[in-house]
Amino acid sequence: MPKVSIITITYNAEKVLERTIMSVLAQTSQDFEYIIIDGDSKDGTKAICNKYEKHIDLFSSEKDEGIYDAMNKGLRLANGDFVWFMNAGDEIASSDTLENIFSKLTSNTDLIYGDALFVNDEGIVRGLRSKLTPHKLKTDISWQDLRFGMLVCHQSLLVHNSIAPTFILNNLSADVDWEIKSFKASKEQLFLNEPLANYLEGGVSNQQLEKSLKDRFIVLKKHFGLIPTLFYHLIILGRGLKKIWTNKGKYW
Image (cartoon, rainbow, N blue to C red; front, top):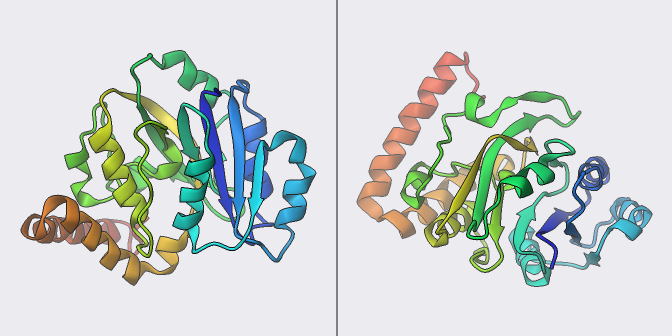
């Protein structure tokens, strides 16, 4: 079994997909399988995948019910000890990231997490997620620490295949739910105080922000209850307004 299944979800992403593939292939440790799940793209996405077909262990291109349906498909196909979602436009932070992770693993590690760098469409790094947002990381995260939302972005989270949950559908905050479930199930974590991924800004949640916020409330209420979630959202709102005020009108 490969140590990691790296899974890329893509749809009509010809402008950014190649940077993701190149970051995967550049790893100094090649102890992984690479899976690309495409939603039957109509642009040049398939041609790019064909270009790198010798390096892609599994490529599937067919219509799906959205990104989280595609991510579930990737989970079902994954053979690695760990699963790692590095979607189109995202990149592994550096060529030795996987090698560095493997050097620190123990036989009991079932969840690995770190920071991420925000990157714009042109691939320009804007800064660390933990610096640009209120989401501060710590050495030992419990699932209760996720009461304010997605503490770790999924691009910087590797979850052991044995505990990796499926994604709920029809909810733009399904990744928050997935992360909470993963931390709930985890027995031994590995925290790396460094970026594991370059995160491409402007995903589905940002594009449909109102629905994403409503869906996040649904997810957090399911895990923490109605009254605590209402209280947590007051803190989230206050924290966000403070950030906007400090950044002169911008959240990050």
